[in-house]
Length: 422
Ligand code: DSN
Image (cartoon, rainbow, N blue to C red; front, top):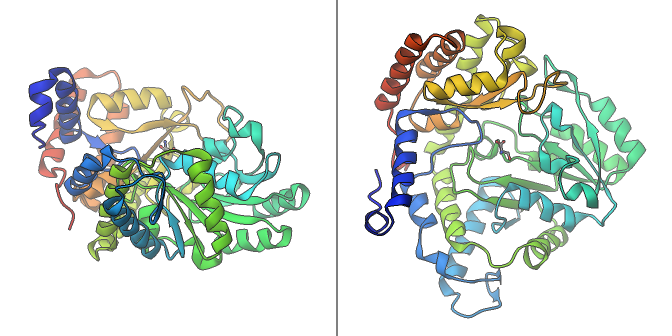
């Protein structure tokens, strides 16, 4: 537990919200696959004195004085990021994954140029050019999809055909709701044919790549990776861009982040990134990453045994997508709400070729990064999946839900959120 000594004395309203969130996280289980628990050390750095400092520019090239310590901490973050992702260059200043993607687009393209990315309804992300986003007014986005939504196989023939037709400047691999490994070599092969850059948005799977359980797109020749730092990597909320080897790309990325898009970097977050990257370089992080995937497989088995349809037929990573409406007659929104009632937090999600609406879709998306941080293994992941299914079946049964809430709480209390990972 944190003490929040000064906030408690000075601002009881904010104190109440902080304590409430601590308790919510303590007695409930977090299955949103993009969330995790940051260590106490990461949170100390994130709440540190660096929030006081302006430091526009990069280490050794700043616009204001007094930078000896900001330079030191940003250099540590950059060096560790390069080591984690086998990159020659890293920009640790993006405020989040969306900011990282927008900066990357402006670094590699001119307005009107084309990006070929995964369709949102098949697992892509808003920042991959959804019509509602600002970047969709600046760049042209074309799509590829899965060939078979029940195996997750990407339609690489379609991807190549769209690339040949539209001549994109960027071919983007990556997703926020997709559960299979990608054929990165194939992306590179097609990109070479049309003269496109290859970019992987690895926001969800950062920790799995850093921990060596999923492939690193750089090993297949990708040019750039964008990411968030707060998901499976267990860092502070933020973004990052890494470049495999080309100095010219790295220079353009740096200019696009600052002064192109952002002002002063948030050095407290950069310091927290440095701490988190140090934790991810620790040998124990490999075990964590491997366990995340094993736990997801354990949950997959329970859903499969219950004959609940899983998109992509299962998972290779940390997340699962279940068609709960098609299999159990419970909508994604109903599932999210009833699971919240028993202390299991996840999100409703559209399934591929969704027949319902975005606000009340057919699916749910859930994953294992946070529960694995609590030290849970296959037995607990299995138990949680069983509790989920029991809750979905007990939708209207208040007495059953009270019991299920207690079981979730008991499990959480057996596996408290750790303060330190190394
Ligand atoms: N909001 C993130 C997620 O949940 O996947 C992506 O931006």
